[in-house]
Length: 326
Ligand code: NAD
Ligand code: UDP
Image (cartoon, rainbow, N blue to C red; front, side, top):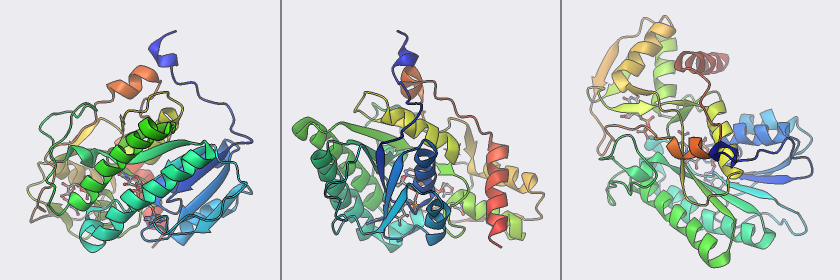
C-alpha cells in the first residue's frame, strides 16, 4: 500500500449524519453543501454572529439539511436519540477586525464551544474535527510552516484572543483524544477566500475585490511586502474532507502554497478586474505576520490532495459573487 492510499474516501455518505457548527458562515456553508451533495444529513448550528441568513437559505433547498439557531457556548440543541457520525467544529469569527470588536466571544467559542462539541462527540461516538488556523504559528520564524513548528505567538497582543484560543482548542481536542478516546482530527487552515464571504468582512480579499469593483483606493497595510498564500474555498473543502477520512489525530496544514506579497495581490486584482483603483498605503496593524505559506507535505503524503483552482479563476468567481450583491 502506498502512502497516498491511507485516506480512503467514501463514495457516498447516505445514511450518515454530519453536524457542522458555524454552518451559516463562509467556509462552513460550503462544507455543509459538500456533505449534502454526498447524500449525508447535515445538522447546522449557528448564532449568526458573523454568519448570514442567506448562507442558510442557500442550503435550505436540500431536504437533508436541518438548521438550529444556537450559540454553542450556551449549550447545544436537544439531540437525544439522534445518531451523529461526524462533527465539524468550525464556529468562530475569523477576521482580524473581529479580534478587536468581539474578542471575548472568540475566546468563548474556541474554548467553551469546542468543549461542548467534544462532549457531544464523546456521547455520540462521533468523529470530531477541529478547525484550527495558521495563526497558531503567529509571526512565524520558520518558512514555509510545517506542522511540527510550535509557533511564535504574542500571548497578550491584539490577535491573541484568536491565536491563543485556537491553540487552546487544539490542546483540548488532543486531551479528549487521549483521555476520553474520542476519535479526533485537527486542521490548520491557511488564508481561504471565495463566494459567501461577507463583503465587509475586513479580510484582504473581500476588501481588495470590493474596492477594485467600486474604483476605490486599494488599502494596503504597511508597504505590502508581507505575504500570504490564498486558497479557494472548494480546494479547502476537498482538503477538510480528506483529513476527516485520514487516521491521524495530529494537526494537518491545509491551504494552497502559492505565495503572494500583499502588494502583488492588490496589483493582480486591479489588473484582473480591469479596475481604475489606485493603491494607498496605510499603517500596518501590530503583530501582522510577515510571511505565511503552508508546507503541505503531510496531507500530500497520506492523500491525493492538490489545490486545483488558480488565483485568477478563484478571484474571478469571488468578484462575480460580490457583484451579485450590488
Ligand atoms: P465565518 O465567520 O464566515 O464562519 C464562522 C461561523 O461561526 C459564523 O457563521 C458564525 O456566526 C458562527 N459562530 C461564531 N460563534 C458562534 C457561536 N458561539 N455559536 C454558534 N455559531 C457561532 O468564518 P470562516 O472564514 O468561514 O471560518 C470558519 C472556521 O474556519 C473558523 O473556525 C475559522 O477560525 C476557521 N479558519 C478560517 C480561515 C479562513 O481563511 N477563512 C482561516 C483559518 C481558520
Ligand atoms: N491587509 C491589507 N489591506 C486590507 C486588509 C488586509 O493590506 O484591506 C493585509 C493584512 O495587514 C495582512 C494581509 O493583508 O498582512 C492578510 O490580512 P487578512 O485580514 O486577510 O488575514 P490575516 O492573514 O492577517 O489573518
